[in-house]
Length: 117
Image 1 (cartoon, rainbow, N blue to C red):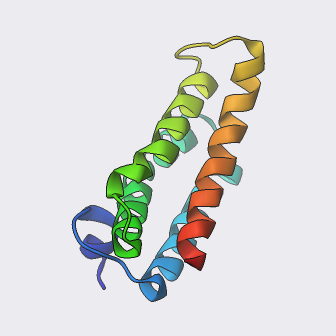
Image 2 (cartoon, rainbow, N blue to C red; image 1 turned 45 degrees about the vertical axis):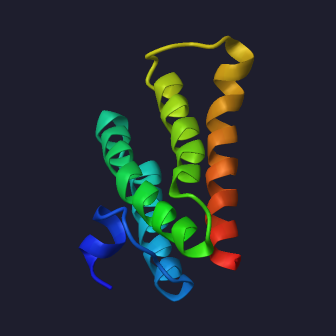
């Protein structure tokens, strides 16, 4: 598989053997921007990486026999978490603290689920 197939084109399927190395690359890139790069540059780069992450998960879900639109759940939580972190909106102090962590847990659970099944 090539870059376009894995990260750009949401149509089609991605087998587990191709999904796991591609996911490791994305997680490493996100970790780099989360822990090494700081400020708005890091946030922007992580936001840009949401599209290839969505495409990879959507293709894997399609291969598993599920609708690729199921990948919108972690994407919506991630976008909400970024909105709170970047102070675009607030949902109250409790949700402002919990939602980014919930997005991380749900996204991780989807990634592990797609890796195992």
